[in-house]
Length: 171
Image 1: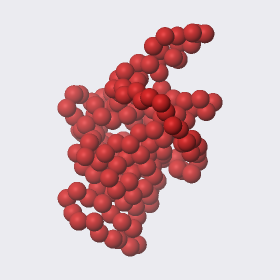
Image 2 (image 1 turned 90 degrees about the vertical axis):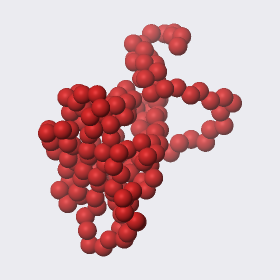
Image 3 (image 1 turned 120 degrees about the horizontal axis):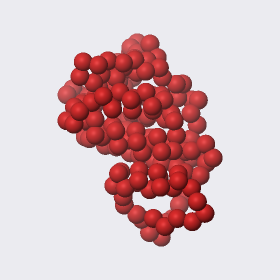
């Protein structure tokens, strides 16, 4: 198993449980979760060597969100490449307890099947979901004629506006 750490060289370990130790600012995790929660209730986080990859599709297969967040955006990035799936609401509620400038740590051990989230002196175990239970269709081949770049907060606002419904809406 390949273990990745910014503090240590890449090493290979045998006979160990997969490990995840990631620390991020609350603002980053809040934006990630708020964006995903506009479309789904649970998601699979794919922790790679240099990035966090997330792709979700709503239940009606109308909206798809794909995120690739560079590992440099996180304060701590020590992990065995792994997938962790869980209900987003549990972590969102914990993040709501935090204050600006605080960090949240996520740690897991596949031996227990739990994701441990630590925010200051608050520690919570979040039951994970089998990642294979969350299927996401492949990204269809696209050749867009234009691209739109939005901030996370603008995108969240658009998704919330669309959820209001109606026959016609201008954004």
